[in-house]
Length: 294
Image (cartoon, rainbow, N blue to C red; front, top):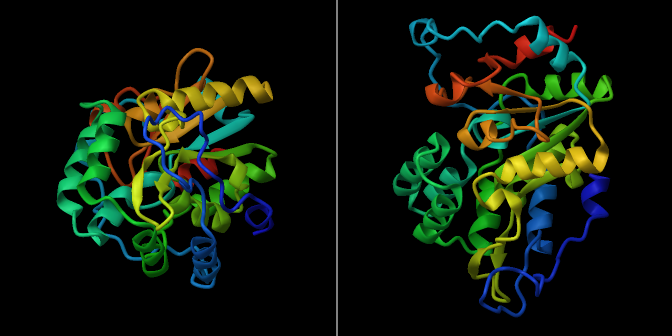
């Protein structure tokens, strides 16, 4: 909680943004009303037991052809000695896709979900899908605040214990997401992750709370952005071993020279075969990752 209180709550939009239009003022971070809604949200999290989900169990037949569900010795060595672990948020740390949920709340759920599926499967550039999805419902600051109050995040089973285990090993934990900081802050608070360890997009609002776009300066607003975020973290902290965990093509991109040493595909919510097939390790339960650290 202290990390958020001490953070800058309202930040004027940088005049050096790549966005060509000028808005005065444009708010990038969490407004005071939104911050207060986060405080109210905390009272809703009596425990980290996930809220109901429509997620269906993965059929054994659908994964029988994968040979990466059991980690090799090399994979286990990297996992057990990681300096930092970076988690995707939507359909990984949380059970849902945040942009789909707020779009449904604003009345454009189906159309936005179709774009999300294309983006996560890697068939369209992420920046194109992000702009297209936001244009379909253009959420206002008021709508965002109401959404956060009425629909708290649904935490994936076992993620809280996994993050506690990693922190006990002095492993740094980051949230790297194509979603929005304003929606990820409550998740980070619940999981005990410092807000400065969030790398995500920013919704931009005008002086009357109207939607005006997103910050195109954020690396995560475009394809390859998660890889850039991981590379920057590695350079700034001199990490020797880093891992990316997620479910989508943008997470897989983070595994590259100078970036993540290993990509773990989490298929417990969304099982994307094209992504899973290229993972170093495919898991469907976070308890498997926890056990491997014991």
